[in-house]
Structures are given as C-alpha cells and as structure tokens.
Image (cartoon, rainbow, N blue to C red; front, side):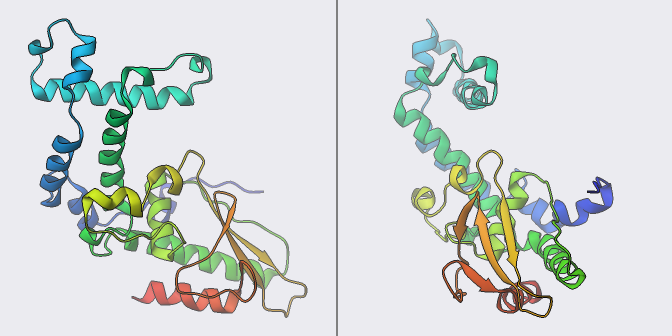
Length: 248
C-alpha cells in the first residue's frame, strides 16, 4: 500500500474554479435570499431570554450570533467522546433546532448540490475527481490484479461528486427554499465519515466487470441509468454514462 498526500492532488480532490468561488462568496446575489430565509426561520428571542436576565443588552445581530455559536457547539460536542454525557441541545426547542438546521442545509445545498440556483456550476466542480476515478478504474482493470484506490477529502467535494454522478437521493432539484429540506438533507448525503464506493466484480480478465455503488455502505443506483441486475451495472455502461457527464 502506498500513501500520497501532495498539493498536486488537490487539483482533483478539492477543485473549485474561480467562478464557483465567486458564486459561493458572501457577496453573491443569492445570499440576500438566504439571509432573508434565515431571518424568517431563526428567531433568537426566546432562546436569548432563557439565557440572559436582560436580553435587551444584545443587538439582534449579537443575539443571532450567540444562538448560532451555541448551536454549533451543541452539534460538535457529539464528536467529543469525553463529552458524551453533556449536551447543550436542551437549551433549544425543537422548532429552533429545525430552523437553524434548515439554514445550514440550504447553504450546503445551494453551494454544493443540484440546487437550480447554481445552474449546475457546483456539481461540475467534481469533473476532475470523476475523471480520476474513471481513469484509475481503467488502469486497475487492465492490470488484472486486485487493488483499491482510496481518496480522502472534505464533505463538500463528496457532495458535489454525488450530485454530478446522479447518485439516488443526492441529486434532488428544488427551487423553493421552503422545500429544500424535502429534496436534499445534508446529514443523510454527507454525515461524518461519508463515503462513496465503486466495487468491481470480474470472473476473468476478458470479462466485462460488474460494478455496484455504495453510498455510506448502502447499495444505490444512478438516476437515469438502469442496472443489469439488482444494484449491478456493467462497467462499459457505467463508464459510458460517466464519460458523458465529463463531456458536458
């Protein structure tokens, strides 16, 4: 097993074009709609009133910042084994937690997945990664030896890859922010340790390989491509489908 971690691999593991960086920036036009969405769904008055004797000492912006900061602490505490007996979730009502998550989910959806607002720009950021996967698979099959190519990256780039490939459950399209959470959920698409596996099966070197896809260890299909049996695709069919995505 060989391990490589060099900046040159970032060109496909974590590629983001200048156009995509501009689209995701805080000054992008669509952010105004997100800020309005946040004002409508995150209301800190009750939360701050339960914490402070004099809530009026905080401006609205400060109240929102405090609520948001404690929300992320509560979320991240789940990742700390020594804090498993401590929780900040009881500081929030269910509706407050849901509203905060809706805002986070909306931002992740527009910046990485198949939200119509990005017009396909963000899934296209995974083109280089998908090309590397196809080329690596071709080399592995040509070698005739059992092998595995493993890649590690951040959640946003996996989300873009899943959206580009059309992995079921990861490519929902919804233009209404009030329905984003029905079309796409960040915790399901990319939880901690999220992964996509392409598992190849071949009886002989001259056989066409069969491939199944696992998303977070669950068998999944691709939108618009029929398998030959169960979750299995012929590599020739899947490869042709993926190459069409690369050529768009």
